[in-house]
Length: 233
Image (cartoon, rainbow, N blue to C red):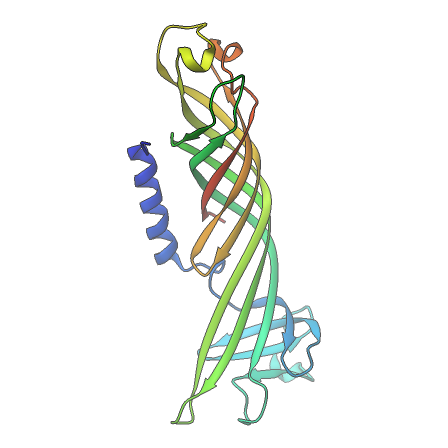
């Protein structure tokens, strides 16, 4: 099984960018969230303000000054006995540049199932939900250490281009040449993100874009593929 050099390079670059970027998609930043505290277990809309190691929760849907707010909650707690963790949820549009390093193709017209590793790249658009768990642990010094745990999931569709091997075996001997054909990728996918790692599975269909598409046995046939994504919005 051979993975194309271009695919390896893209995966390395994506991993490096995802690690260094630390964008809002991965790390908690101030903004509007659905907020649930550990004391009341009640979910409400809230605006969160992140000040260094302190998170201020202002219930409501608009950003207001703290002086004008009748109720706000501060993390870490003022009293050590107070509850000191919160769960935050945020919905957003998800636009990713994705690569599909592996495609599994079922048996077609008697040709064995295949695991293809040709280069494939696409743009993915979906709706994403990010869930953040913020907790504080009091140290012996009396200060608080903040810990953030993040999990996200997204469902959407993708469209892009890739390459595939075209030869007599996958054209039922209608052609004698062997070459890498240009294909259009399209389909649906589910992506999950744990901290900086983003990956998922896609159900897709390929269209060969040259004159031999009428012979290609995988034309518009479904495949299942591994997806690795990098957020671009």
